[in-house]
Image (cartoon, rainbow, N blue to C red):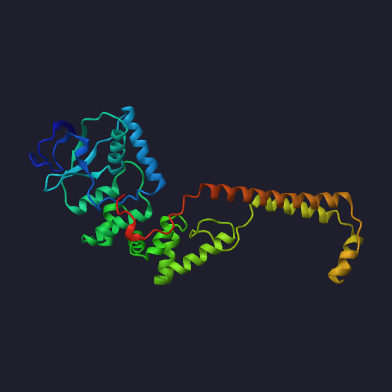
Length: 324
């Protein structure tokens, strides 16, 4: 397909059907490009999104190639971005920091409201949308008259997955806040919604409290609420140590152990038993493996806690931005 670069005159000057053999790139003033209120799905408070915008800003400042944005002209003449919202914000940031960018290339978009949402959801450029943002996009298509099967065909998903995301998009704001804050995985939230309906939020909070008491910082569907099992290698080493210790236990000492079991605990504590050095070393090695496992688990939890994104403090959904 050939590209034709033109100065901005009118997006309606020439028809832009999908079967055209030319794709027009318009050169326009970057400050003319606006965001359409309520259109974008991106949650700008997400630290990953902020880093993504900063990366685009750096590219513009250094003169690197950045793919053109897809835009459309509204009836009042304003030009709004359809695909490339983070690029637009990075561009504005670069200009505010002193970059001289008098013109940028944009691709005109011609399509209906549903096609605009589909383009945003399918876009392979930039940072992947969070699951909750995708769910909101599916809900927007649903409001435009798309059935779950039509959304599934459009986005190359199964109908079941689309229905799950629609359920998440319609969920209680408290459930969505848990997902947005990365405290509960989308699949764990969906599972709770399917099982408990309107009572999903308190159930998830209860399970999250249980998970935190066990040392986990995030509730997922695949992780059981019971304590995690130790690694298999650790179990094998501990088992080998105990097995070696029992193998070094003389027959007479085994009989003595059987007699000691019958005594009260307080009386057993006062008794002394002589054992071989090998038995003592084997038991000590097994105990050391347990200590190492606990130390590794503590370090892993510390790293998870250090990497945990800041808690948005369960923001009021009415005050949360609706753009991505």
